[in-house]
Image (cartoon, rainbow, N blue to C red; front, side, top):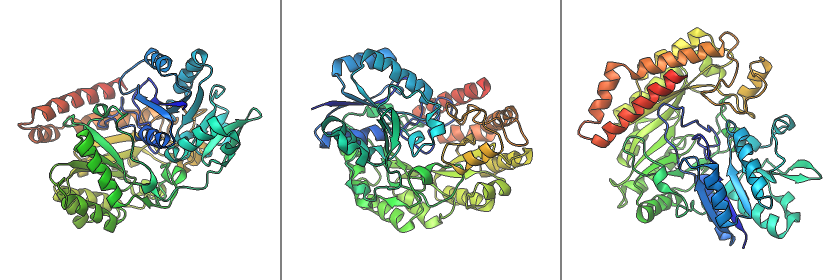
Length: 481
């Protein structure tokens, strides 16, 4: 059988499996690298079809191009699937070029949200001469069928949705309008091939698995890729299927910490309660801990208390802004008051809070930024990220920024920390970046914040050490920018 190689290429740390956010981990303040589930899912699907598979996350292992080429020599890969992001696509394509020069017979598949129903103008910016296929749809449902068609019956390639393939020297799109409803049909990510020790809970440095619990989002946030690449219909895995994966992680791989990957874990209260009850009424209760994302609306005290009882220790909210104007224009569907109320309810339930904020939208002035800073300090979350709004292709924000002339040539190669636009209509990107730097340092260097972190880490040397490392990284990254 042919061999398919699945990789995160060498380079800076990015959340390559998080098609929605594609976060820059090296430059972040408090984000940790999550498991390469997209590769794990692909591996499991390919093995079901009988393919030989090997998998490696070169970026997180801090390995080099030489390491990758040596592995390809030893494993004789016939097809290579590489997970890319908007920010890394140029460097990833350079790696593909060097690989093809040394291994001209290998077929290359590039996977990433950037290739979801892409415009010709986007493809024209990229040197794709060394790439055979582009996957913009849900790769875990696609890659096994694509490999089978490629190796055994190329006439079937055009029937595979969510991809682009070459025909007559041109890129041809297939259908990008359909998504798979039965998420339980997917095999669990093949963690036997993944180096699980690479993906750690940030405070304790214990192994942490990512569990994808749902896909799609009915919200309309102008900055978010999810409705574009995953659809507006909420697709949920069954609580039983999720619990079975948790149990496998715990029993077979010794993993007791989890990140529940979902655009909004709490949007369906009955489903959230059902999953929590499965954990509470099992022999895993009290043995596992987990983190989840939530919207501030809908959320309620009962659900948060149930989550805490089931092992949740931290909930992450996309507060986004303290400006009523910005919340309305970004179509967040939430208010400043709801932001504050959600954080207060989470704290009352005994949960730690992770707050995400965005600045630098096209309409924003200094007052909008100040209002966001005021909210940050008012909520006083345990962990925060303050990002500069990035206009990804396919989002309403991209259309706004383009119309206002705020995109300098391209958003490709940019991220939350790397000048994704030239600024807002009223502020230069330098002013936005200076504001971010000032607020980040002021927030984390408050005596009250430092004392709270020390209290949380009291008599926990490992956590204290990691907070110290985190603090040094934060200051270094912020001052460097």
